Image 1 (cartoon, helix red, strand yellow):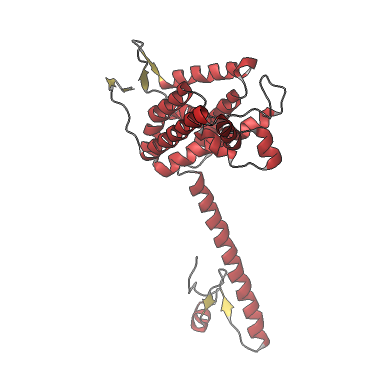
Image 2 (cartoon, one colour):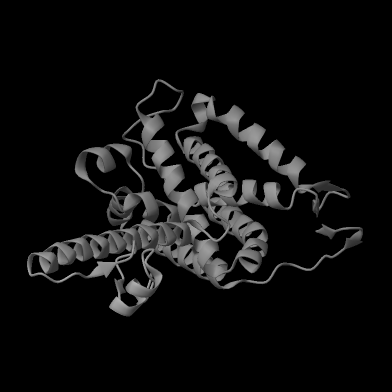
Length: 280
């Protein structure tokens, strides 16, 4: 890759989750090969049970297939291409984002690609079928590709063995174009829907998810709603207590946050008192 005007032929490091994902996919593929040689029916059952079959997900609740299909592969070239792309384009992003956000992004694209496949499997598009088994990490990989093009678009990639380089944004644009065209070719099958889903959900994540990640944004929203609820409960309890004390000929006051106002502060300030106590 080129960085600025300087060229480096060094390969990216095997970052934590890139390495783990590659090991898992390689181990699962090795198991597929062994079963294919000695127990083909078990291999086929494994692919149907853990691959993505739209009819099984929608009608029988095989929800886990939206993730597990990404660990299965059909051929040596299939797994090699996906793992090479995961390493080359995923490692720089995990280095920049951190392991948690990288894994979240990758799984977001994998699940998004699976959902896209489910949505299009029942359409009259060429190759669409709810009974076709989809396997491969391409949904997550294509999400990484579009993220790389959006975030590192001006970085130049040296295309070995060809003696020239190309900017990442142009390379990704070519890949997207080829994927869209292939989707409408009947011979290409339903798997291209997963490719499109990975591209779409990768784009949506980069453009609309908070910078610190989807889980962080969701947790922040959860704690905000929870704190609002606790404040409402405190204000409600304070009003009830004021009514109760007035019925017993005692006058107590709370501020707008539901915090108790000592009598001396209430008498001295006369405008709602101080916000003593704690405010969350």
